[in-house]
Image 1 (tube, rainbow, N blue to C red):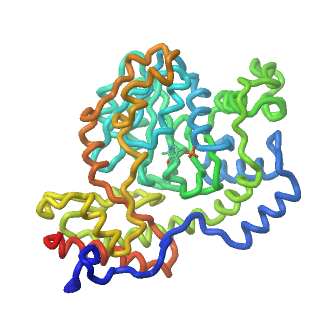
Image 2 (image 1 turned 45 degrees about the vertical axis):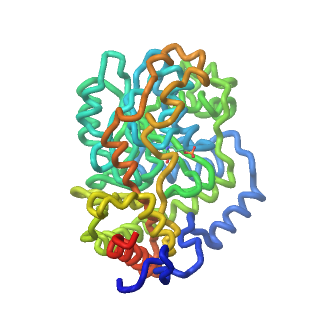
Amino acid sequence: MTSKLALLGGPPTISAPGPHFSWPPMDDRTDLRVLAQLQRSISIYDRSGVIAELETALQDYFGVQHAVLTSSGTAALHSTYAAAGIGPGDEVIVPAYTFLATVTPLLHLGAIPVLADCDETGNLSVSDVAARITPKTTAIMATHMWGIPADLTALRALADEHNLLLLEDGSHAHGAAVAGQKVGSVGNIAAFSMNGPKPLSAGEGGFVLTDDDEVYYRLLLFGHYNKRCKTEIPPDHPLHRFAVTGLGLKFRIHPLAAAIALVQLLDLDDYLVGRAELAEVLGDELSDTEGISVPKLQGDVRSAWYGYPVIYAEEELDGLPIERFYEALHAEGLIEVDRPGSTCPLNLLPLFQDPRPLFPWHPNANQIRYEPGQFPVAERLHARTLKLPVWHRQQDISLARQYAAGFRKVVGLHHEL
Ligand SMILES: *Cc1c(COP(=O)(O)O)cnc(C)c1O
């Protein structure tokens, strides 16, 4: 603490070159599995081989009837809304604070995204959702921000009370749970990304979960036409006759990506146990530090710790702007500290301020006119968020402690800035 800030020429807290975090962890098992798949098949049209193996493993892990793999999380979300029957004129209440792909598929379906604010946790405010329900509302979509579960109990009750579907975007939160109940198993349909940095990674990929047979058939028809629809939709089902074409889109995952995820899934619970320990280290080291606050889990909650949001309060540090604080942290060698960019309140993005130039055919585009200032909690939180990665290995505990020490150093010497 006596040493000078690195930004002003002092020695940095961390001098080890980066990156200090990489994801996903891989070892020989991944290499062997991918090589074996390369020799077996790199194109799978039905529910067989590694596709069936991974879908069955996901069904078992989440305790659901059906899992459908997709080429991305965005494709999983698009399929989710389509299989739910959402279309023109339907309003879907979605978080203002989420990644844009939680919401963009609704525009492609001609539906109306109704943004709702979050609470201090970053997850949907249940009271704000309730206030936005209208006779046109058909569903509520919840994201589990940075891996911390949204209030699924309250959202489920609200959805049931109004006869709405509850949908989940679990892309930050594979394996996160409330009272032992995993996120993705509470909503009627749940979509997940398996993009590179996500807690369960395939490099590129996604999946959809549901207990509903009819939804399962519609998921298949939306993005998995021909062979898979022919074998999975019962011949006596009224939708079977569309098996050859489905809706004509193709959203299949690559078998090599599925092979990567299959190995990752074996270790997911160990990763989460490790991350919980490291998140506790960060919490212990940072919780009494002026100018920042750290997440506190309420009750019997397991986070997937996709990120560790640290909320900055410049008023506690003599008005030091977050940009300058961030710059000082990076100068200290805390290169993994991130200010989230594209994961932001969606009302700040031009697409949600006026989608008409990109969706000229959208029947209700003139109702989708958001502007800055409409979601004060989300906007305030976003403006103050610094995100840390959450490591999972014992040998990274000292690195996590060094990151915390860097924060404390900058806070302690902030008057120099
Ligand atoms: C990553 C992500 C997506 C999109 O997933 P892709 O696999 O990149 O298409 C959607 N929603 C959330 C919350 C995400 O984090």
